[in-house]
Length: 560
Image (spheres, one colour):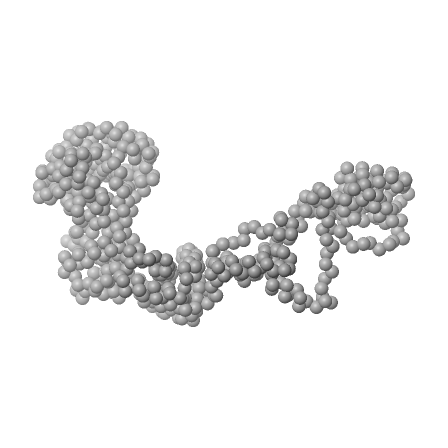
């Protein structure tokens, strides 16, 4: 095939031609001019930003017939061979295919021999992070003290995967992502050279999709040119070729959200489905648009941040004018979660519609409004809790319950000096059962001895029967300990009664410790407070706004 793709046809041949890497070009040109060229370089950066291209230009500059020179002539045999990729003294190695220690040993042996035709033997090792640990170790000595005629140029997209021992032996140059404006300018220049007509601003979409990669932008441009032919490039052609959602469709959805028009938002989704558009890409572009709208609200000079024309910035500012930054952030959080969900969901349309309806129709509370509402809850005269029974809604609901349906409130929790709590049951009716009467007398004696915790346990227990000198007592949820039984025995002696108290397990239920009972009461209380908080509309707004959850609750009455 005679056709050469744009990325290869217009590959830069001079340092100054590399797009968006002026800091690297200046450093290397100065080093060549001053004769301070290192023996090992490391070029790192994302894909398609010029690492391998710069390495080849550096190889030409070192081996040029007029070199070393910052501006290789491109006419000598050495320059031509490097450009064509058939130079015997410039060896390009793909580390992804040559990862083993044996490959590095072979390289190390070959490096000892002088170059065949040029002044230097140059090794360009691409994707060097793919080498194994043993291969890196084998390369260390040669990389630090190579033969005088050898220069190493390492290139990688993941410099953090390289050992520190390798990094310390190289001059490291970090290649940056190329700004969108520079990529767009470069694409327009190439279209002029190719004689292709382009609608003003049409290539901005291609530059944006490249995400800082010049090579990606050229590959996309090749695809667009193939679609358009000789008719010239229009923005709608780019959308059709690359499966993009029209900018106006995204703005229409944004206006529906800011205007709280859920019906229009759903209509926009339906139109996208009818056109066969990628809903995941639409969600991503909508999130990006709201990001741009947020920038227009918070930045004094949004043009410098957004890389958009003044007219586009003004249009976005007009759309975002009805929302404050907090409201925009809430919508962005919804769309961000939607983008993650749509990666795995089998029903992207349903997920998208739910998110858009929620963003468009749900009332939005600002942080100030939420804080004011929480302050109002704390000042409410019922219950004393931040959430739950103290809310006005709960008080109203409680007031509407008929008196006949109100349950008898539980007895209060009594706390003794040791901070243990026992439920105080209602007063028991007088009984003719001698076991009940005797148990009550023993309990009163225990109270006189100042043993309130034990009295609480006894109140929860039930005397069963008195047979001769044995009083059988069914234990409550908390079993009697040996110390408890000793105290009961002392109380019986103080009463002058000759009986023995025999505890009986109650109904086969597992006896619980005092700490377990107390923890169950606290957990039950916390669960109730949490549930009431989740049902409170102000709390719901706060959770949606910040994308948070209730981690811990505290009862203001007990401080737990």
